[in-house]
Amino acid sequence: MPAKPLLSVQGLRVEIPTRRGVLLALDDISFDISPGEILGFVGESGAGKSLTGMAILGLLDPPGRIAGGEIRLEDRRIDQLPQHEMRRLRGKEIGAVFQDPLMSLNPLLQIGEQLIETIRTHLNVSLAQATERALALMRAVGIPAPEARFTAYPHQFSGGMRQRIVIALALCAEPKLVVADEPTTALDVSIQAQVLQLLRKLCREQGTAMLLVTHDMGVIAETADRVAVMYAGRIVEIGPVQDVISAPVHHYTRGLMGAIPSLSPVTGPLAQIDGAMPRLNARPSGCAFHPRCPAASAQCVADSPAVHLHQGRQVACWHPVHPQEIS
Image 1: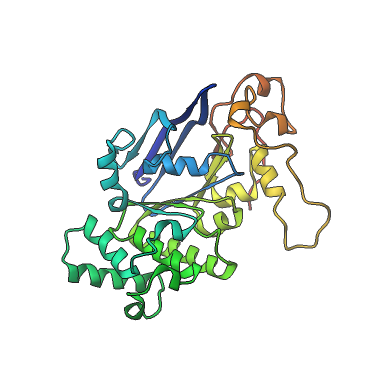
Image 2: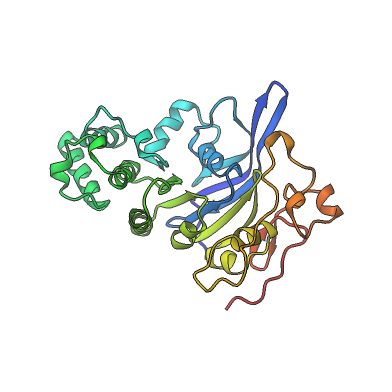
């Protein structure tokens, strides 16, 4: 029997009112994440990946608003919570790891102070217990000699070490869900691999669910269990990572896969997807990908495809690819 979803997002719609009308930023986004599972979100810049994470965290920048659908953490609906309740939920039940650790850390406070403050905000513990927990978290995320670095300031840490501290902050209250938005983009490759391995290990050991937002399919392949491919505010394909990578069924996903360099001898130029992602105020009719799609038909121009099951994964396409059997 499959595990009950920890996070369930159904029919999420995000709008941005402007002087010239309302822009549709996210359109009918639906997915689940189970305890201990990592779901990756991938796509070009502007696809709506980070916006999805911000909507879940209750951090949409005004005038952006949730205009439809629902977000449930376990059995509790959280998209309609008042701001003060959502603030309590963030940190305690939902952790967040962002791309730039300096945006998440106070440059004027020692690292130990920041960890203790976060722990005592969400957990009913003494100062001594919070200190002990903070040191244990620093060890867990791979900070060497945490006692010696407890009184250091953020600027005294390298980029990789700062990101580890941000992960420790996100895990202070043992949240059920972590939203990680481009958590390794600013790191060099060796540190990136260590941070991703750490996130995966912590999810497995603590049963924490994770939404991992990235533009890097390599990060998805190494870290996630399933992947959702986004285009112009919609999920166009979602399924197990290896299935989507080995045999993508949406033409956009095929284009993304074809543009990734291979380690095998080069036999020709890399594939490319002609055109660009449409702006919010210039989204085409029907399937938003049809101006760039090699298989577009009159139906694609006229009607937007609903998400349906195809070849073992969900896809929103009128003419999905029929991949060969995955070995």
